[in-house]
Image (cartoon, rainbow, N blue to C red; front, side):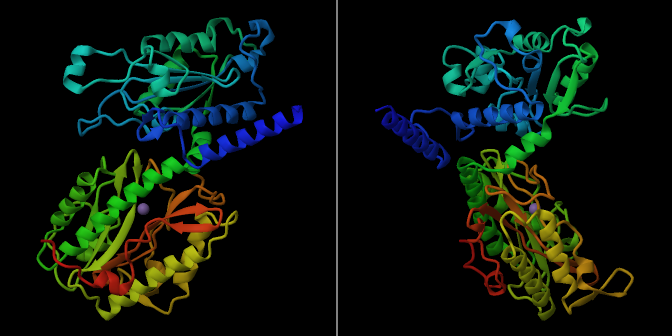
Length: 473
Ligand SMILES: [Mn+2]
């Protein structure tokens, strides 16, 4: 009987784990930033576990008397503060690390985690009814806050500093033996001018609690953020779908005598009109010689037949960004030379993707494959001094990067790409002496069966980028 019950429990647990890992969640569960609140809770739990492992502390039953808890476990604290103010465009955008752990996109929020006690407190600003008449209702602390945020304790932000100083102890008394409490936070060593709420918090703690020791939270959070959950992947897919629409619009509009900004306008229209929040980064529409300028984004030139246009763009959807580049001939037809270079860049991307090996391939190892591939090509070009060079000389930027909440997302370039990682492969060849550059960039997901090209629906074959779609009505 007991055994059977046990089996049932195990089966039920396995089933629930399966449900969670497949992205399913309770229908009535509240959502923050388009993701279920249980997901944020799981991220906080995973972070606390990492800190416990790093500090060799185990969780202590919370009902045990204070004296029975180990000093160490009680005084290891994780603290994060959200952004304080609207960004330059007048809209609030939360810092990605804080949004990743909480889903809260309000100014003046904070989070304290006690990994030794597996305890979490989210601090939210007091609701202001007269302000809400201008800006709409906001999430606040209160009876329903725990359900709405998935965080068991939600307190007013006014309690944050008091709670934090209680957690790290009275620094003057050196209560905690070997130099005070241990605080994990972002930006542990800020310079006086380092901007942002995290740096400001560290400066304050260094001044007010000088015996406290600090550890950088960024590497642990970076590792967690590298592996995307099903709900994160679905947001990235939405961002990619919007970017696909934008590339289609761009391709239709590109023609002789069209200014670059008209293309950018159509791109932003596709992003926002399709439900995206903004462009994940300034859109690059570089024609002619501008196609050789890697981060050209002034987009003021008028394009001409015979030139190429590099369109490097990405929509942001629910805090996640796409990043996709296509290169189009303005006339709808490559010159022979342009076609040869284009095909080479495309072949390089294919070669890199095809050589992917799970558990082995890293961003760095892919970069080497790309450089070797270009070096072996018989194609050559002249550099700025008129000297003929092998074509790898004209591949002048990194091959790719992780993709997520940041366009250049966090993650370790030298480590094997884990299952759940999303990244770009973006080889490019830029030949100013010939007045053109080519870049092709796609977004990939690592799965247990290998790479999945998330942006595969956006055509990149020679004939496909040459063929003009029907003109926009
Ligand atoms: Mn990129």
